[in-house]
Length: 101
Image 1 (cartoon, helix red, strand yellow):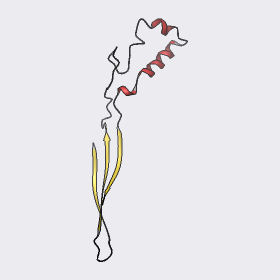
Image 2 (spheres, rainbow, N blue to C red):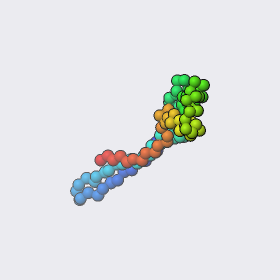
Image 3 (cartoon, rainbow, N blue to C red):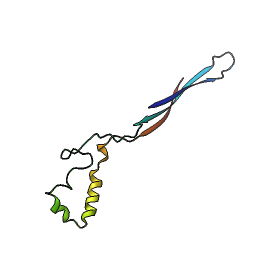
Image 4 (cartoon, rainbow, N blue to C red):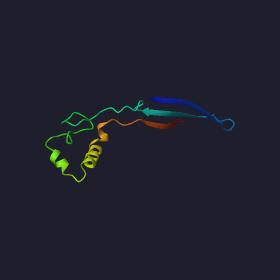
């Protein structure tokens, strides 16, 4: 979404000279207006953006159970595997001004 407004500013000139005009535009750009977490990538084994299937795999259970703190390992692995690049960018707001003369 883009909201903008044009402004015209007339500068006084010396007598006998042409007045100078300055135009500027103030705008706000809002990207991903609804802040939707659009999925742009998934793990091939599960088809989910936040689960690669490692923690649920029966083959890997003995390896997971050998960890010092199994629950902490599962928590940290879940945080690691939940990749932010599997989702679109969050809402961003940009404010700007453009000048012309």
